[in-house]
Image 1 (tube, rainbow, N blue to C red):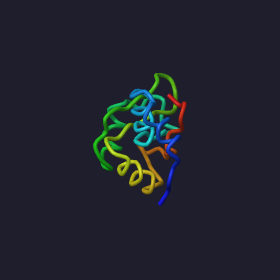
Image 2: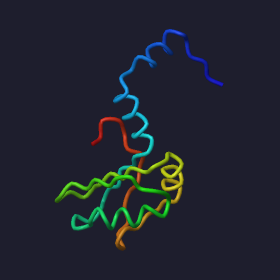
Image 3: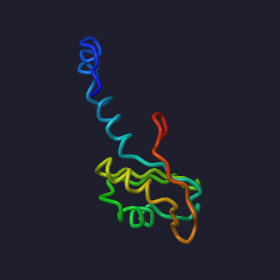
Length: 102
């Protein structure tokens, strides 16, 4: 069991809702690297949905990475635990997205 001080609890409680939601989203977001540049968001959604409901896929055009946001952090844990991943016949990297990554 982890205990936090009353002061820390008050600071957390005062965080804006947007910050709280971003932190929750980061626990549900993975970064996918070495993606084929021509891979579509739909193809990525279809592949990663086998680990749970996918809320959003973001793949910038002409880049070889993407972000996948699941509905639950459990889906993220299962997905990361199922490495290695192949999307469209290509081996891709999968990691928990870090704070500040878009």
